[in-house]
Image (cartoon, rainbow, N blue to C red):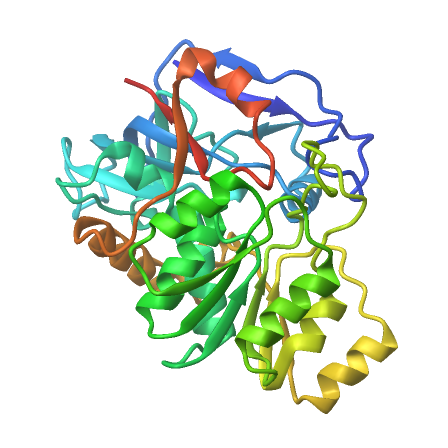
Length: 361
């Protein structure tokens, strides 16, 4: 059986970024036997999995577990191959989709993966394996951010910089479905083309060629008629090109927490994925004066938490229904075969327009 792992360098620090993580080459392991499932587990024959980058929060968690290697891929789509004796709701041949919790450290980028019976949901027959695998964790994070942290309401004004990334596209589409007015920004021709192709009523700020944060702030304030926005979803590690340079090497994220605070309305909600966020006293005071709230988003917290597991499964089922009904459209950059996956991993970056999906068959 083929499975993909990343050697974990114990000398790396938490401050090391994902793109510069010194962990050596990716390894395609050959396991002599197909894994077996325990009493409450299900063995899945993987048809497609989504490639995602390891961020600081993931790396810090896995270091605490003492892992020597990291499983590649969490989201998958496939067919039930075998079930444990205690499994009653699944049987061999069922098409399913799900997310492997990171504490299991089992790669979804493999021919087979073993998961708990409560970590998967049925895949609609009309949804392709690539579409099902490409958006699960992004949609989960978007749900958590919008519904459970930002408490989105109809007519809320939502700003999400860089809405053409895998996570950004899910957040933009779901926010529009929930009745909010959505503002996002496009920083390349590819991003602009994708966002304009969405059949939803969203405002796309054209920032192609590079726009300074203060200029983008003014564009957002103009769209809000200087009243501010209700919700900001900050992707944290996403940067933009400097001026006309094709290189994505801005020294800092172009959208900072200070800029977020300056465009939030009274009672506004800021949700961020910045792991190393440092809030200056002046910024904290602006949040206080606006009665604003600050939340941190880590999507894997829900698969790991027992208390949230029921809502987590409800979200996955709702995502499956929306995919079936074409209410949301996954943003896939391209698909690759397993034999080409190591080259595809080198193309991963936070600003990628869409996700890279591995098709096993």
